[in-house]
Amino acid sequence: MGVTPSPAVGVPEPSELLSLATDLAQAAAEVLRDRPGDLEVQSKSSPTDAVTVMDRRAERVILDGLAASRPDDAVVSEESAARAGSTGVQWLIDPLDGTVNYLYGIPHYSVSIAAQVGDAVVAGVVYDVERAVAYTATLGGGAFRDDDPIQCTDQTDPALSLVGTGFNYEVATRTVQAKAVSRVLPQVRDIRRAGSAALDLCAVADGQLDAFYEAGMYPWDWSAGALIVREAGGRVAGLGGRPPGRWTTLAANPILFDRLHAVLADVLTD
Image (cartoon, rainbow, N blue to C red):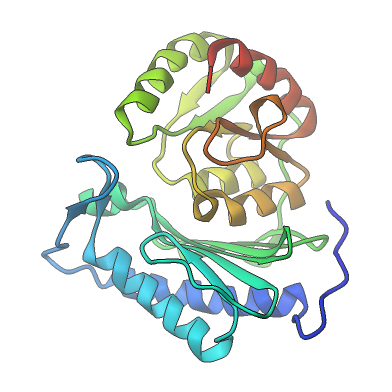
């Protein structure tokens, strides 16, 4: 766990930011559950990278809630232009992580909201919409599934590790990822690809996966989940000391992180 920084003047405690984030995530989840027949699907970064009208409706609920409660905060959200702020608080929002699952009716998708103060994410929630489960954390305050504390597994052997991954929608990146899977798979227990990076990170925090790796993520994809993993005793970082995000990012308990890092660094080039 990290050490909670002293809050800036006028910045709420992380617990207050988390409370707001959780309320907004649950409100967005209610919108997503009311799934229309026509999702008005469009493409974003590639023909396979989908966005639906429900991504935007869920996002609007969150943005309107922030505008009403904290109008001077900065906001970075997946489907809208970034908004500058003056309070020192920045919100990182993915209103629907797992859009393709949602599009196909696969019940595995989430709402992810993180609050950042300065360079530190201090509060985060990933809300599993179909299961109505909130994964939460505050910096220095531990990680929870609803009200129950959670912790990463203590597995240290890559060969006995269940590892989650994901694939980017850019053809060049996913081609490299597909080749890498064939080389990683023989060195681990098995690989899972569930379709929501935010929930995969929470699965690491909750001991449902031993590790997770993926390339091509944006801050709204990983910020809340990474805090939850760290507060559950794990480590999250890019390969070769890089920060998480666009490069291949790995999450696991600290010992397994180092051992899997050696495996991934040998087969993946960013």
